[in-house]
Image 1 (cartoon, rainbow, N blue to C red):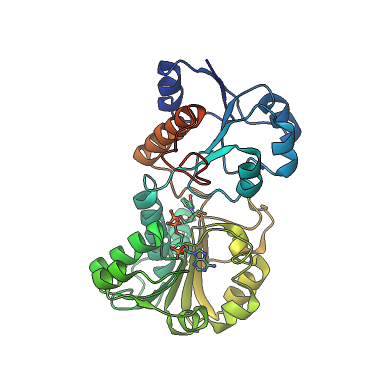
Image 2 (image 1 turned 90 degrees about the vertical axis):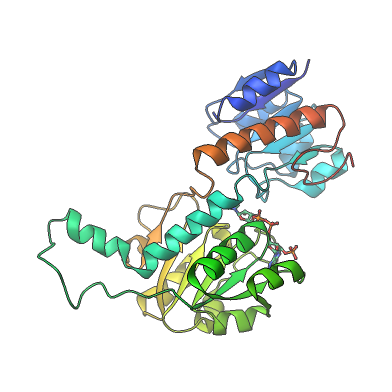
Amino acid sequence: MSNVLITKEIPSTAKNYLEEKGHKVKIACGFEDNKALLEEAKKVDALITMLSDKIDQDFLSHAKNLKVISNYAVGHNNIDSNFATKLGIAIGNTPDVLTNATAELAMTLLFAVARNAKSAMRNVSEGKWQGWEPMGFHGVELNAKTIGIVGAGRIGQAMAKMCHHGLNMNILYTARSKKTEFEKQTKAQHVDFENLLSQSDIVSVHCPLTEQTELLFNDWAFKKMKKGSIFINTARGEVHDEGALYDALKSAHLFGAGLDVTNPEPMSPNSKLLELDSAIIFPHIGSATVKAREEMALVCAKNVDLGLQNKPLVGDVNNIYS
Ligand code: NAP
């Protein structure tokens, strides 16, 4: 029997699955700090972690019994996977099962920004709605626009397909490799980052947070974007510089921005972005559908059970058993 710690409550599917497989499961309610998490992690063979748990070299070196860490997310930038590999710890994530949920959330932000949802909703809720307004709330029509997908992987491609097939949009994309099948399906064009910025009416971020993508969207990048364009980020907040984004919105160089992720996270209630009607911000809810979260819980549990048997995981980040 192995001991498994889940660092925060997730759907009970995970606990039930692991208990059926004979493991002992403890669910925490989050931890005050990383030190407190480490003390508990030292006692177990496997962890199911949240993207807010920082699993760095120091943590990994001290949690001597760990064989598997299964992240309740597809992004795993919170875990030093290279170091874990050196220690023989399997790292898991939850690809595919949250792709549609996250792409749909990116579309939600895009529609909301394009049609001034924040100021329109406030107009009603604050009792300022006087009647049909011929000259107010003019937004951007999305049909046949050009969208630039930064990171055309699972989620980026899913969003691009919605935009192409649903809204007749032209698709530009960046990725480390060319995506031939995706190009056939959507007539997408692989372009370099600068061309994507200067030619897109909408830029949507779907790349992982890495050393290469950290602060990719800085002052230079926002200035390269077309005047009146829209920025959407549902990937990781550290990919954009929030001060530079504020300047681009405040000066009306950008029409608007939709963020599901912020830099830092959680966002400070004093962030200047909150003052802008053109910025619509969600509290990192990309995968928050009942279906996606249930399936993520099951994948996480399977990752743990497989890793404890020295077998390849379902969502396998460092492939130490394949
Ligand atoms: P994925 O399938 O691995 O796609 C990532 C894409 O980014 C790949 O196409 C990759 O290119 C590309 N990429 C990597 N480095 C790049 C760079 N420097 N410049 C441009 N493109 C680069 O991952 P996914 O499942 O779509 O998830 C993407 C990210 O979304 C995750 O890493 C996570 O951070 C975020 N996410 C957020 C939420 C949320 O709740 N908001 C939910 C799920 C995921 P190659 O294919 O050529 O390697």
